[in-house]
Image 1 (tube, rainbow, N blue to C red):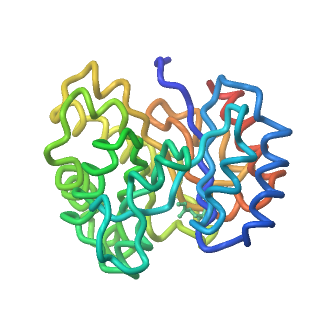
Image 2: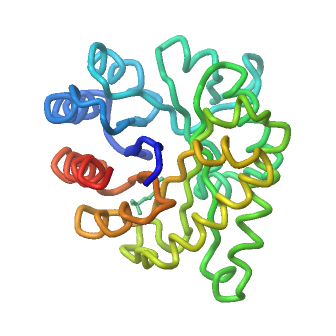
Image 3: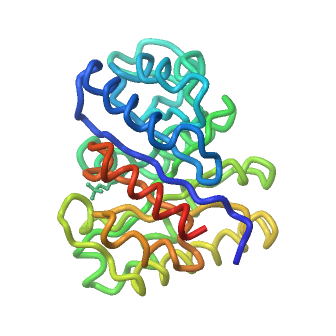
Length: 256
Ligand code: 13P
């Protein structure tokens, strides 16, 4: 057993108009908005963040962005910043998601700057790492994850590190229905924990949550969440309907 509180985060990706997002948020708040034994976070698309934030007011469900720029303001068309997210009461931000890395060219260095900017602005980064299928088949999973973790967290202090949430998302498991086996996931999570021990020392490493992401569903969640280094989930598809998302929160409550 450990003292880490489980965390279930919904990454709604590019889904839901603002009105639809409000409806989903209302259902989530009604079902799990009062419990505070498991941390629950929803990350709507930017056009819905503020409206969803209003729905979450007074509940235990927290708000997150899906990305942000590392600068606070300026000529960066199409981008939003950490202070902007803070101003609408977001407390988390997903950074370095594999879709950002592969489709939008985000490098470890860019992700690192974003992690630093989030921490400077009291936003908790949900910092994503994970290997592609080709990398797994080549036997380089741990090496790839090590590089992403070390580069992404460069310059992060011990004090800041406890605010970081890491999400291990094997790219081949995202949106494919192919979930990593519990053994595959736990192996990488334990490896990441070991890296965190080296970077920040044992007591800090033991406080950092490491989420699993990639086709997590109510059916496979209990087994994944029972693993000693799996502290929750970053959920894509199954977070788009309140029923499955709430079932995942309940699975985390049962696993705590
Ligand atoms: P799926 O749950 O749809 O596989 O997506 C996972 C993910 O990318 C969450 O960030």
